[in-house]
Length: 168
Image 1 (cartoon, rainbow, N blue to C red):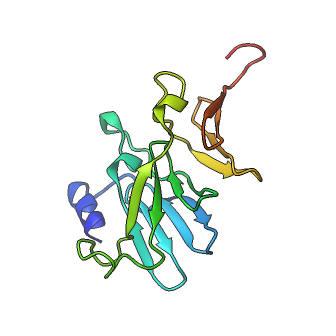
Image 2: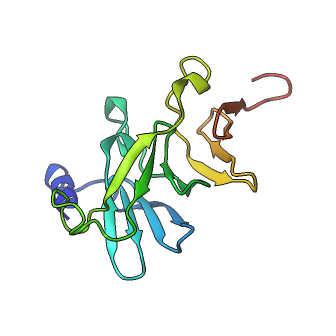
């Protein structure tokens, strides 16, 4: 892929592969999604593999790299990847031919706002999560690295901090 070619051109002997898998998820339609270390998200629909990449999902400030550590489809059919900034909606078919600006093998999607920063405690946006599950009520439960668990009920985020006795 052009992204992988660029990755290896910049670092021909990386310490890890940008294709390393961080997560696997099966959506409500049976498509299998793969989150990679640095090349974004791959969706397999049973016939084709299509890709999505947005730098803010994998690359953080100060050259830190988060990778695609979590994928979930919410009760409204939108997808969440790694953070609360955005959710995504995908066309049912491959991006090839759907939008002439997309290269073959790219997923066609629209990006929409995720959690409104007003629903978060001050200074907390965005929240990067390492894993996420939904409950029978459609709430999303997001675990973070060292910062506890967050619940998104569709309107508000609730923080459940890591506690050691009565200390946060």
